[in-house]
Length: 198
Image (tube, rainbow, N blue to C red; front, side, top):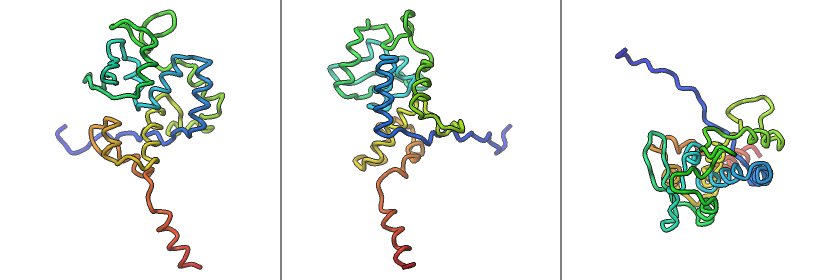
């Protein structure tokens, strides 16, 4: 106590994100298997929302006029997140009352507390799970948020600071995990060595 020693934090950063084809296959499977889960996956892919943020969404949190959602972040802070209009229409189609959770467990009308098990059923069916069980490459509902950020970084159309804002990261350090995905000139620089060796 009072010393400089700190508990070592485990490296639990997800390394795997979905390709466009994998995301489409997952959405197609879930549309038949569990329509609500399909909508959660699509919402996270389009907005970067965390699973817990989606689970807590209520009818009153959808603001069609401002085209956004009032979400409850980690720590209990409520923030406004702008979302595409088609996602607003998708959520409004559930016709939930103000205090009702938008995504509800079948027959319970209660909010989800965890990802439905059929998500992993779909992941296994599509061979998206790592064969060796390495958790860094596991596909979870949170992977959709990671995919959202990775695709934006790869697009070359956002800056690191813009990505930080879109991801709602408290500091840039959290966003730096996507820095290697931004298009750069590394390939051109590596070809210098090739030309020297020829």
